[in-house]
Length: 112
Image (cartoon, rainbow, N blue to C red; front, side, top):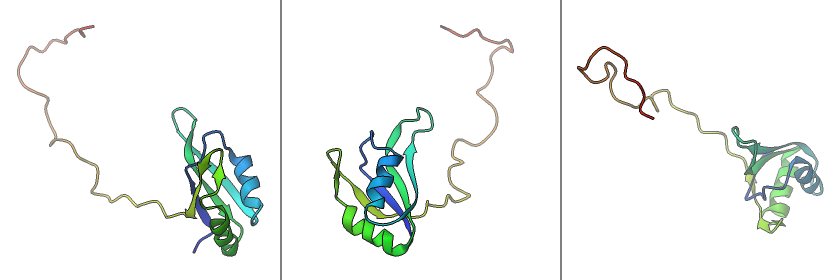
């Protein structure tokens, strides 16, 4: 097992400092990262906490999984590695090349 934990169902108002305090109450913590939306900067409702030891990570899971925080039951488990994206995935779309045919060569004004 690793030392990095996933913390889900996190109330949006809970930040890094509160999580640091909560997890430090059961075992030493190396780092805390609350995930935020890149566009808005708002919390996304989950975080990653890296514990100092694997034993500390196990203790945190045992003691903090399903703990009520801000009226919500936390999900605490071992973080899984991000799924690797295969090289052939996602290209999608339609063949290459031209855009429709015919018409005059002049540019059309947008219709507002």
